[in-house]
Length: 360
Image (cartoon, rainbow, N blue to C red; front, side, top):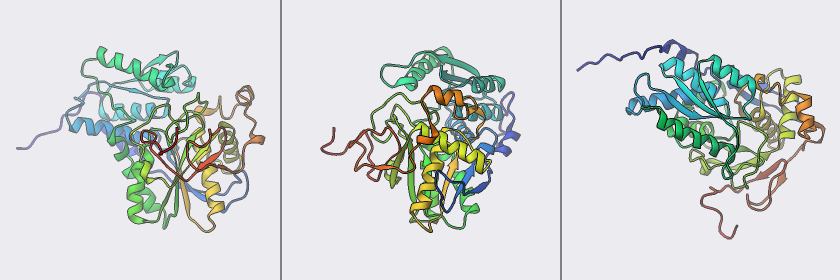
């Protein structure tokens, strides 16, 4: 029996041709010192940004399983980047998008999401446990009860999030002859988990270096209020592939700001918190591992950060002096040994829900 696919009202599947296919560029700008250079995958140049890959994957997966009906609304929590990706996926596949953000979501991102037709709900106060993410998720559950047939992708725990980055891995394999070290910022854990498997099938000895934010609890540090958006978490996403990482670095906002501004001045391509953090660690890895081919992913561009990362008034108000940013990491033996307040490195990785024996 042959069936004909029904195109949901308002769907624009031709937009899917814009997904991914981003270039790589060689970065040699001092970050902060000289280094041999590394490759950066410029995901900010794709329609919908890096997380459009995950957004499309999650919605298509839900449709295949019958969890998302044609034209049904999609409800999700976001700090911004996935929201843009879902706005893209919603238009391409014909689903209205309802997003829950918080009061720290930058005004330009709010305007952009609404311009793309998103219904945006803003929570005004963080939860006592779990911070802004927990507060957003609480409002999200209310919306699911209010909107019959609504689908929640649950980006933090959805394996389709991870699967959406197979195309990114395939592009890197086609663009690079060899790769020794991959540096990935970690938020939901989706893109690092999604690309490391396929890449190691090509380069079995490939090392994976995670980049987290100070104040993030993903790799076992205590949860603290975080200035940086787009990487780190106050909860424990199940998409994080802990066993795949060889080491993790925690980066503070001063280091990320310094890196972003250096990239903008010296390489023209730059981005936000995640980009600055990943770039600093990639430059360090290229410097320390002489002769190694290093690559990282720049998740987005600089535009949403003009009022934060690139604004002197903002950085001064938050005590961020790029001139005091660390130029190398402090080493700790395990994630519980000391609280990271600046750039810290650890080569012992643990899932915080199964902590190391003998640690608090």
